[in-house]
Image (tube, rainbow, N blue to C red):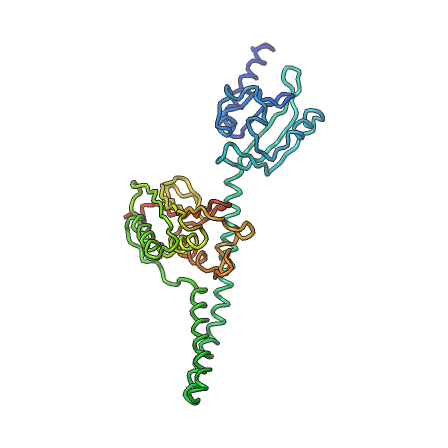
Length: 361
């Protein structure tokens, strides 16, 4: 039989072991908001051990956060817990994540403390946002294609009528019908671009770097701004099946956009890596090729960053807004994903291509 002391020790042992097994990060703060305890999940999240963080103020450990220390002090004073499902946390210059946070009051050694529970929600939010953007992109594409077909049919009749009319007019009047035909052809070319690529990709097992080298050569041939292409390739990437012409067009559209906005003498980086456990259109992919196109220009205006892959959306006054939409379609044909992150001074387009037994044979 267990006596009261044995039961207390038994309970404490389980509590400690359970806290260490939780996937939710647990942080205990004292009344001065100094760290008194971290479970292993919190150590992993903060990328530091408990020994290094013990008794440090939370504001020192997490200097950049939307979690207001005044709210944590209110928890100690009032005992009223709170939850926030969208707390932004930045550690260092590059690691940033979003967490769902619950703060509640507790006591240790008869002293008031705050129990913080943090759960990262970046991945769920990203998957949800990507699914929504994909749905919106497909809707916009279908709408544009439907509109393009409606324009193309009467446009053909208009051009044909102008051709027939030309035979009945003198040379001076034929200038007007020639203008009608010329403008009809210009509109037809625009409509064809709106409809996007309609041929299925011709898949062939080859090295992805051949495409990137071809893009580099094409940029070098027409390089009035003296743009430098920086290659950062992973030579261990296996050959996979893809349509070289289509992927070349997709990447070249992105690179050409960058060339037009960056300063003369700037650089564009083409980087390749292999990544594991990536999400493409809501599905987990074990291995992917990651192609990054990075420029150091002014960045994409924030108000269009969520819609830059939609047809007719452009950040340039003279842009048609079709290049990125076409690139997105071409990448989708390869069961891949094209995404972008941008801020002033750095824009990165990321292209994911799945590596599987099917496309490496």
